[in-house]
Image 1 (cartoon, rainbow, N blue to C red):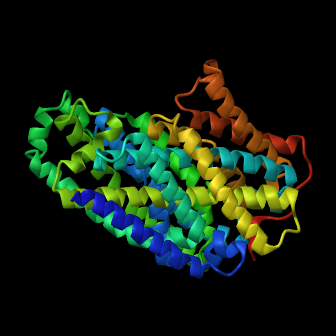
Image 2 (image 1 turned 90 degrees about the horizontal axis):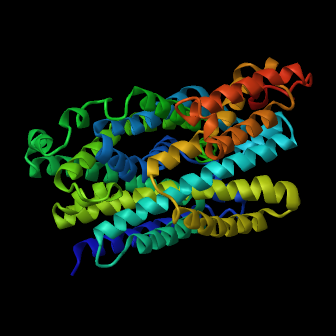
Image 3 (image 1 turned 180 degrees about the horizontal axis):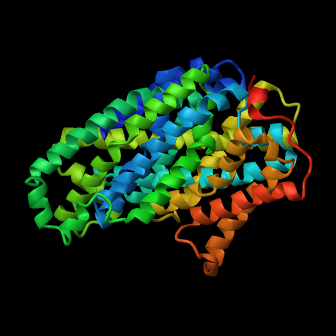
Length: 470
């Protein structure tokens, strides 16, 4: 009997049991109960939800993939995530919760205008759909390496997609929070234990270094990626923590502002070290299995260890990938149901019907993101590209909060549109790439557009965030 297969089946059963329990907690008949957990998550659930969102496929499989190529410096990815979460906790989480809105585009219309909301939902959907799609790739990599006789990469992606969609469909945000309460401790325990065993089984860092093409670079804290790339990661992750619908929606779910603030800060602290452990496993894979594809680096190392431990660890990583995907998928469905369907198609829809529509969008968007995933390559590269678009939304939020006097009616629309145009030009016209990364272009252009708008628009916004929150 295949131990790893039994572990995976057991995990799936547990996750669906949690989801059905979550459905009872979300069974208020309202969209808010489904998408925002009735705004009832305490500090602990906010913490594990943030960790679950951050430490998924990109922070484990993706970091190990990058470390397999450049070394230990790939671990800075989760440090950047952690710092972003901490800053969001200190500055934004409590204020977001006190706004009593459901989406970032809804906030845009509340303080600016309808077209600001439109450009907001377009930009957010681009980000969310791309970020969700890479979770299928990571999930498929885990299952295909864990059970190569059962899954190929593609069939593993299909099973992952079915679980992602199913769990989200059943219990909404309560599913995500409660599943993370189960997944996060197991995921951290598994990665720590596997890292120690992998280092020991390969003779320690000294012996591993002997089998690397450039050990000095592989074990250097920054040289592999270089400081410019690491700085880009920090800029991107801090930016997205303030405006990505998946992250901000967690703040909306908190029972109060203090729970949101504390949850983001504690979650950020927990994120910081885990990336370097995943990076170490990617380095071990490079030394031990130099011919293995980089995406399969982390799963390959784990499966070389004790079968039961390998099964538990990879299943925990896969379940963590589930948690990240569920949060992002639910965020996308919330955007479509609230900011498109209810706002522009059927404003008078009953709450019960809107909740059913939201569940329908979970299925539709799940299929769309799976199709995107089939074309995806380079997990962290795709994440960084997609998340750079959050720059426009972060600028709008921060300046609305701290400098409402310079905010004008068209500021949100102009800035959001500028962000989308920059991303399109960056991809379509290589000649515009005069800075090292698109995130720099996003910040320069979006900030300039926001600051220039008052020269052509004299209509002030309705009121500042602090006044509306009060």
